[in-house]
Length: 219
Image (cartoon, rainbow, N blue to C red; front, side, top):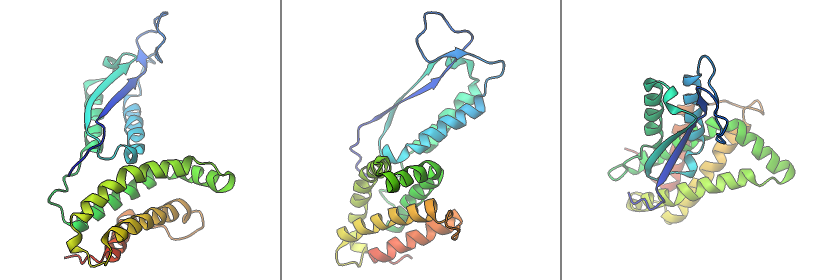
């Protein structure tokens, strides 16, 4: 898979020190008696996960952990943090993947991203509808700009598997409908008292719909 995006450098801030030095202008604080290491690591990973649509495909080249005094965290906590980052930013190898697998992987990624961020996205989408706030549209556009060109390249390399007469158009419109469906099903359907789907079932059905539109028969 050809990835041409700018490489990624990650800064991680651990804001606690044994004491606050009077000359220090960094965002650092005297450590409490018991550092909330586990909760902080989980919060860092959740924050990174919320940004995944905007860094899709970028290669992680460096990690810098600053503070504060990062060495106040245990080796176990740092290992958990780095393992979580590795899991979140691992790049799938689709060079030999079948077209249905690519569609299912991308659908899962989008669905889980919408699900993790549904509170924030629901709030931004509501403000967009009521007040014309542009932040929701901007977030979706950024995600689209990162994800779609790469997905399109991958799928069109396999267009001989599609029976749709216009594979490029089907790839575009199918991805657009996937975006719209996830927005309505995950953000608004629960608030309307509608059906709540198990994530695996939702991913399976939306993947089937996209593949059917492309004219791809699953084995």
